Amino acid sequence: MRVDWPAARSTAETNGEEGIWNRPRRIRRVRATHGMGTTLPIPTSHPPLSNSTPHEVPDGFTGRIVLGIDPGTLVLGYGAVVDRKEGPVLLAAGVIRAPAKDAVPQRLGYLASELEALIARLKPSVVVVEEAFCGKSVQSALRIGEARGVALAAAARFGAEIAQYPPAVAKRSVVGNGAAGKQQVARMVARALHPAEVPDSLDATDALALALTYLNRASPLGTL
Image (cartoon, rainbow, N blue to C red; front, side, top):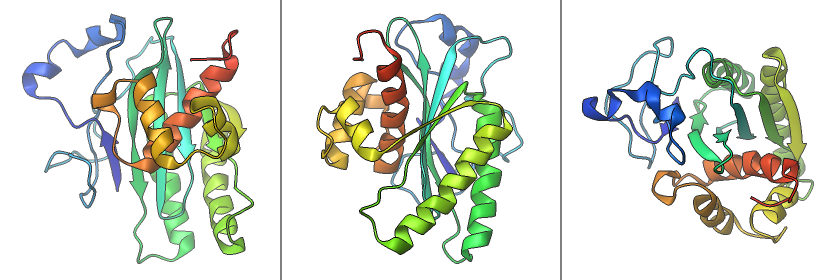
């Protein structure tokens, strides 16, 4: 299942949603699309994956969208931001949870399908994938490497620019400390974006940190 944040808007909020792309420091809301089983507040009913949802990028949009991916074979975090001159704006963030009962090959297939659908909707021009951390156990590193392969292949299939950063680089860019903890990263991500709209999932905030790192390193000043 994929869980998107923020939760779906009310009918009143949804009216006139196309205009939100022209407003500074506002976000385009997203809708959860599959399943439950998460701490994030999501609707109790979800449309099929093939349905159009509010986080689909409108045709003709030319802004740069950067999608960060925190890979894992059970939980894959993602976070997309729009690069605006007023500052980065949250587009979508959440996690893709693979069925824990499935064998690794089946989980990878599930993640590939969900991630490709997500990229097709968000249309990122850049996909940033976290590099494997060598300090993890050999087994964990192998599993993360498999999930990284899924993410890299999905990004390449859609022709996106691909960037890769080690966790320490993202932490240093967003927090100023390459040894920062996940909670510190989450707090700084919330400061860069809108605190009320940033998800509780640390996998999602790690992914957003990767996207912000790309924008930070691309900035002439090197800061957000």
